[in-house]
Length: 249
Image 1 (spheres, rainbow, N blue to C red):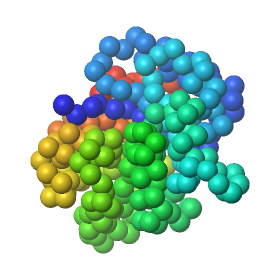
Image 2 (image 1 turned 90 degrees about the horizontal axis):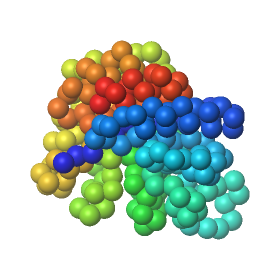
Image 3 (image 1 turned 180 degrees about the horizontal axis):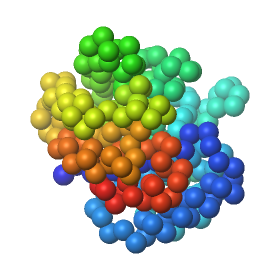
């Protein structure tokens, strides 16, 4: 059975006091929730250890980014090995902001995937199309290419991969893919996984929606058969809003 997952990506937000307070508020919500799903938080890297130290809940903590080498002369970077030793269990790879702002290409992403898996981290691998690619009708081709990067992984490695579809045109814009648009793309991703691997991998890989998911639309999105949860941005910075999304799963 596929995991149901609600993940909060805090991006570069909050000071340390705000981060601890928000985490405690979300933890209190999660502790009252008996749903059969996982809740993940991806804070700024400098807050990971602090949150791990105060975590008394079932929430798992992940890293938004890391370097693909385990160690070396890479000033300012953090490795997957260091994150794992710290107590991290998850990592994001391929987020649209890493692809577009920091120009991470397929080789970079593949190196990161391998590093995360070698260090026993669970991965949320992100894919998504721009507004131009959506409007030009190229979105299936774009997502197909991004999912195709996973073909070098083994079936066992795919057991550690969750995929988040994040239409770039719906991130931080207030726009959201309709449930029909989101369902169409998640159906396509599931079919693509079957063509690359097999039905077992396709059916067991959790697919998350990651484009301006909110308390207002979460229930309709999560009702789609191939949407197994969400990668939440702005709404994860508000405990009550994030709690409503968790409840919707």
